[in-house]
Image 1 (tube, rainbow, N blue to C red):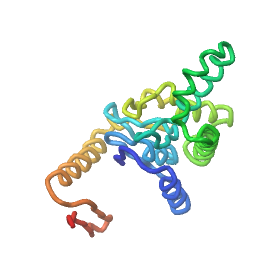
Image 2 (cartoon, one colour):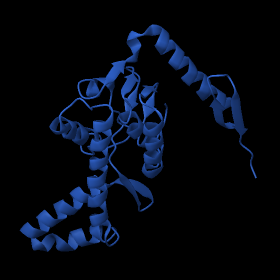
Image 3 (cartoon, one colour):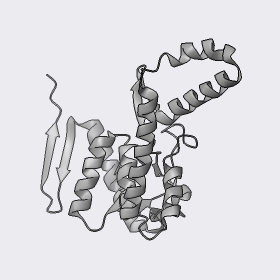
Image 4 (spheres, rainbow, N blue to C red):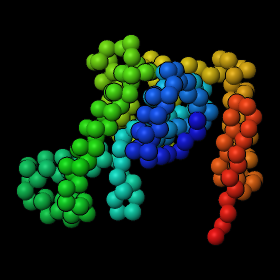
Length: 217
């Protein structure tokens, strides 16, 4: 699975389908599984990663002022403004210019999104990857994985070393044949997309395939 990003609601529907269909799920990450890809990885029973692989934080984001902003960053900034103005009311004018860029009701929506994201992550970990851990440990893991503070940029990946004592994650580099097979599929697929007009490939275990080509209008 190589996913630079993805819509969280669409990802939840995919996870629901996978859980309803398969009793055991293994996820292989050759390079990165960010955002929606990270959620799918944490919904699996086993995660296979190498030193070249990375996950990302599952912190929810909203589209604001032309770019995606982590909701935790908005919450933190609002709390900072509240604290500073409470101590020094003269700073209200400065903060007013900054906070008026945030639409009415967005702070409450951001808090709700953060709470729901954490709750969903705990439920995912309980079902599969961390089902043998205590609820207290699972909540600690969920807080770590949902942290905007530590991984403020989705480009800053969560490595195998970061999660090996938290999730059921295995080192792919220790199985040379499996590693070579996975990386061969990954690199050949990337090259295929770069050098052809294909935009979608579906291949099953019977070697039947469907390829959809890009058609400019």
